[in-house]
Length: 72
Image (cartoon, rainbow, N blue to C red):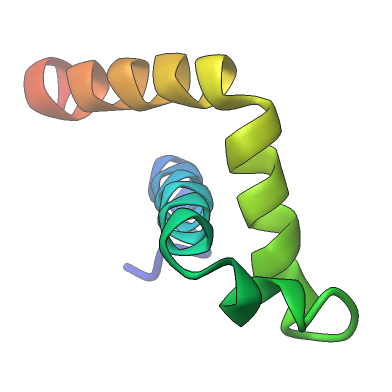
């Protein structure tokens, strides 16, 4: 089943996208900062969410990991 049709998989993909974009922006900020608008601007926005809301993203990662490891 595709991640689009399974809600938990969709949340996992979005959370991984946010974490990956924030990590890439910490390594090479110019890579994401030059694409602030358009279709590639989604990655810049995910990086901003990952940096600004990092405590909430970390809690979501822990909850998702617990859910995947022990509940599924």
